[in-house]
Length: 289
Image (cartoon, rainbow, N blue to C red):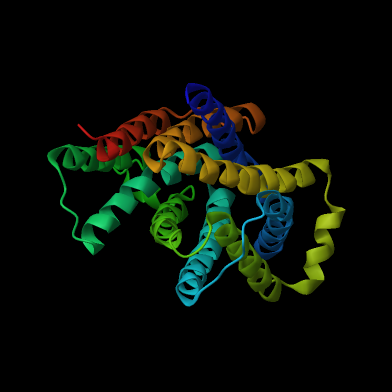
């Protein structure tokens, strides 16, 4: 059992590294091509990357009406998240976006659960929510309110709220459909939607791009999404959702370091301090004393 726990802990750390690097890849993709073109190819390649994963697991493909409802709602939110994250990356920093989204999302998820399902909040969780507000104040530099509308912060906050909704839907969907099938179908729907939305004449422009663009695109679709998400789902079943989710605290750390290493982004003090306070908030919200 100890060996298995160690194995999945190592795999989860690798998955969080992939997720962290995904933010720098996303930033690179915003430099050259129109938003609709990049989003389509990202979902298309992600769908292809799921094919060998589906073959490896060989799970029976079963879909019922309730599963379709979850898939439909999650598809809409998933597409909205991707467009919002690209818009945020165009104006902001990869490191800042990763910290704001990955720390605010679990806080907002908890708040939504408390409101929608009237879940009782303990004193420890209230303290966590308070820390979340403090962390948000520091991260968004609300002592300078005008900065809230600069650097992609509004889009990053929208991403965090959208992902909170995606998390709630995915948690309840597991009863009706296998998580890997769930992710695969959402990816297929997003691919079809973005294909019809995109300007068809501009889709071939990706083949005029250089090596850096293709490395970023393939990394984001395959490693940053398909492989990392699959590891996360498998580990959740082996280690439990609470322990698995705790590894997400590593994402902002990896994201900030990789953005500094690859994109030469400066380590901004308010992002580091606000991110640390927000991660503590998530810890207290989920901690059982």
